[in-house]
Each structure stands twice: as structure tokens, then as C-alpha cells.
Image 1: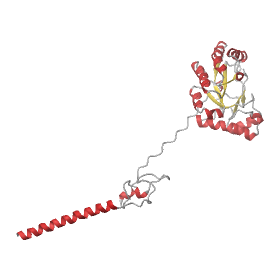
Image 2: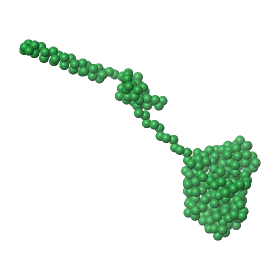
Image 3: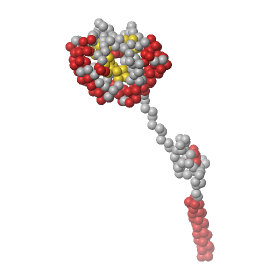
Image 4: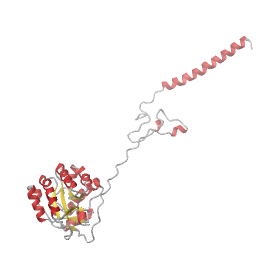
Length: 297
């Protein structure tokens, strides 16, 4: 090859290389000079807009989707957290055949009694009372007021987790016997809803507020909500009047007998102070405190 021809060839190759390099620089330069329409996208590339969808133009997260297989890629979206599972309902023993619709006391020939508590008041006092019973291995029955659960929702699980039983004592603790049927039903249903939401069950028992026994109307409304049984009581030591602890013990132990259902209250200091002596006295009398369901099993 002559020198002139070699010079021409080298010049041709150099021009071709410069042309190719110039083409690459032009393409990159064009990309760098592009400006997205500021109104084209409401969200950052690859993010989720308020409707919960990924903008399809930014499916790849780095720029507009191209044609071909890459166009079908979608941005990774973190799934929402799983919904909290509802609590498992408490397991209750089956009731004995022949258990009446309204229970004021259990089998008189037995040696069991039920200590029941109207559920409201200072949660610290309620917790102290529950702890006394738990240290003795005693299960109580708490007929809870729905408005109290609105203020102290943690107490529902606290009561059940201690081995106790929960029942319905209406939403607002008003005189249910004087209410119109629809209002009475609402009082029962609202408390039942709170029990269901917090514990997984409406509970087995309903107790009327401001009354020892349920009227036929109240029993009908309770059954419509899902309560086949009303829990009344035969021993009322009136601890809500705040007698001394010693006087409260005398009232309970002087009236209780086999099968009795005792009506007490959470939230009263005298009841907390009296409970150890009441449990001691029941033991001396050969009586065993159990939940209402266990009393009627």
C-alpha cells in the first residue's frame, strides 16, 4: 500500500470515529436537555398517588415506560398492614339442662356461690379487687356497663385474662324497666357491641340496670339482642352505700348460702377492703366462689 493510500485510509477511519462519537454525544445531550411537562404528573416517578394507583407513565420508576417487555413492569407497592384479628371469644362451660331464663340463684344443694360485680368506677380499685380474687384462685363475674368500657376499654381483656367472666349491664346504667322497648333494646345492644368488639363475644349473661329482676319487656329485648339468660341475684349487701369493710363482710356472710348470687360493685374501696374477709368466711362455711356460668353448669 502506498503512503498516500495509507494516509487516506487513516483519515477515513478517524472521520468515522469522530462521527460515531458525535452521534453518542448528541443523543446524551438531547436526553439531558429534555424537560418534563411540570403538569404532566401529580406524583413523583414510581410513587403512589392519593387514589392508591401507580402512575403508568412511571411504571419503571426512572422515566416514561417504553414499549416492549419493560413496559409491563410496575413499581413495588408496600401492602397495607394486615387487619388485627378479632379476639377469640372466651370458652364457657355449657349450662345444666333446666337452667331458667332468669337466674337469681344456682342449685341450693350445691356448695358453690357466685360473686358478681357491677362493672364501672375507678379502674385502679377494680384492678386491685381482681388481683385479690386471682391470688385466691377465685373467678368473679363482672356485669359491665358499656359507657365504662368506652372510657376503660383495656378492662375488658384485663377481666377475662384474669380468669373472670363478663356480662352485659346496659350501656348507660339507667332505669331500663321504665324505658320504651326500642330504647331498652338499644341500651342492651350498645353494650353488647362493645363486648363483641373488645372480647369476641357479647357474653352469656344480661343483667338489667337499676333493677333486681327483669320485666317481661326487658327479657324480650335482651333475647332480641342475643341473650337467652338474665342474671339476677339473691344477696344484695348494698356496698354502693360504702359501709365499713367489717359491716360489708357481715352483710354478705350473714345472707349467703349454697347457690347464692351476690351483687357487689367495682370501684368502691370498702368492697376491695372487705373481699379478703368475705373469701375467708366463705371458706369457713364450706362455700366455693365460682363464676355464674360455673354455678349453673
